[in-house]
Structures are given as structure tokens and as C-alpha cells.
Image 1 (cartoon, one colour):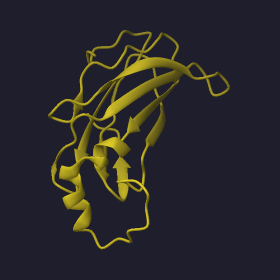
Image 2 (cartoon, rainbow, N blue to C red):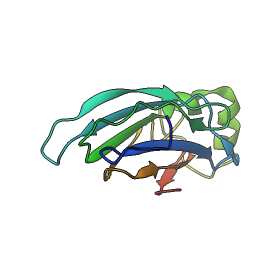
Image 3 (tube, one colour):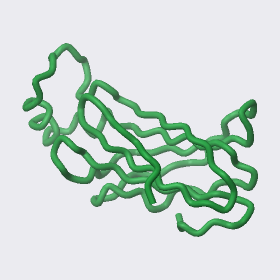
Length: 135
């Protein structure tokens, strides 16, 4: 999706960095939903997956009047890959999980205003995550 937004809608982009290995997280499925007010219901807009550079460049456009956005990152499958288990094994964390990641899903909800672009990076490792409003 283009970083350009109209005066009546906002735009959103994201990328993921796997901080446990210091590399982009490719192949993570991301879903996008929006609503037009705190009491409005969520409308699923579709989604995409991160590329080899950890970027998701083709998220659906936000409808006019969107006030809140939710990005759902399906990170469990990413950490289930064999090449990610080595990074997890280097951590001094308990091995009492039944999946490859402590957080199999990450849902980020944030407010938007018309005419602005919102870049929301996800910094990820098998036992935690952090997000921020990027540029």
C-alpha cells in the first residue's frame, strides 16, 4: 500500500524485525481490521505477509472515516520454523510451552487520524515483543 493518504483517510504500513537473530522476519501473515469509532464493530479488510525484508508493502487501504486500526500478526508459525528454534534454544527461558513462541499471535490496536500515515514496526523475539509508531 502506498504511504500516500487522502485528506479523508489514513494509511498504514508495518515491518517486523526478529531481535533474537537481528534479521527481518519474513513470511509472517498479517491481517488488517478497522473501525469508525470506539463503539463501532471491527471490519476485516484483508491482509498480506511480510517479504524477505520483513516488510508488508501491500496492506489494504483504510476506508474513509477509520478511527482505529488493528494489526494481527500470526507469529507462531514463524517461530515454529526449524531455523528459528536455534535462536530460542540460546535463551535462558523455561521450556514449558507447547508452541514455538510464547506469544503465538500479536494484536496491535491503535488510533489513526485522516490524512496521516502510520508506520507500526513490530520488534519480535520468542518471548516478547515491542511496537512503536515509526516514520
